[in-house]
Length: 407
Image 1 (cartoon, helix red, strand yellow):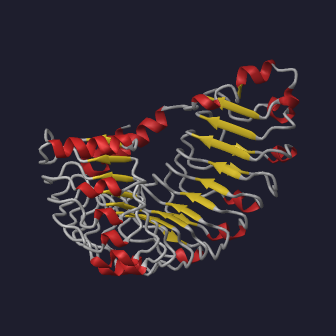
Image 2 (cartoon, helix red, strand yellow):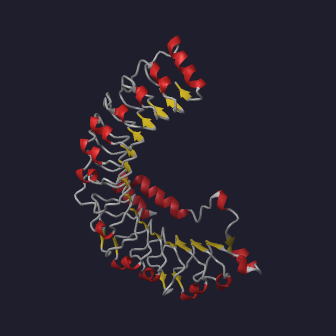
Image 3 (spheres, helix red, strand yellow):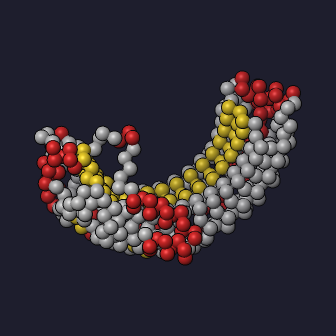
């Protein structure tokens, strides 16, 4: 608690992340309502005379240092969830549970989690989040079926070489680790598809991303990235998030990621959307919301697969004339400085959502009624005089088509 308070005092930007980490550490286990009744708790485990029917066990906040012997009698166990206990290691005897796929050891305050199971071919998901672990346990190298590794909320600074031996590993969650830099020492692992390094303090891309040549998802949101000097050496990246960083432009290296389908640059300091964005020919969703954008290039119409465009909360006074050439489904333009609806609005024939509220618009065009796929439109908080026959007629026409209108 004192450590977090000092860090918040010295770095006000860390306030929200540290509060989240603190809150998460104090909650023993938050079980969603749809999961209630699926876990067998400690008292129920001890009282059961049919342990062979138990598939999910939750050991929460009990004063034990070892896994209770009754667990090993649950021959059909699929998930073992340990939170806020004193258990810091997984013994080899767990290998007798041939159906065990998921294990979690959370909130133990341990600096080391020992995985002494040896060769294991059943475990697919390991969660050691919200401890005080500084190094990824070496025992993971023996988990041949491991697909998901969650080590969020710890003190990890690097990824070790032995991760290349986890030949089935697809997803790594490194969020909330307070990393300023990260050195990926791991040798090539072609199985990894998702890497989450959000909520850290990274100033640039981590070195060594080439260790994951088949990476499809890269989450760098909530960091301090102001520039990208490192290459992004993957030809399969589909999702990239740099949400809530310190970018004041769109780095050229992002424009080279021609396979991207989703690019989230929301909550940065970007002023101009570079024309190089047109190279992202497979982009489906593009967000540059909550920046300082004053210009979007005409080359936006080169994005032939773009469906969802989020430009809200910027400083846009004009839109590119080429915008109607994009087959958009969702268009968010709210909280800008626009004085008019997009030119050629009726050409956005596929449009389903249009948010253009909180601008400086004083009229609504009749051609909005030609958007037959529209399901929701907002143009409230503008300068439009609403109590006129023309506006009432347009609104009535949209409501007849079952469009949800807010004005």
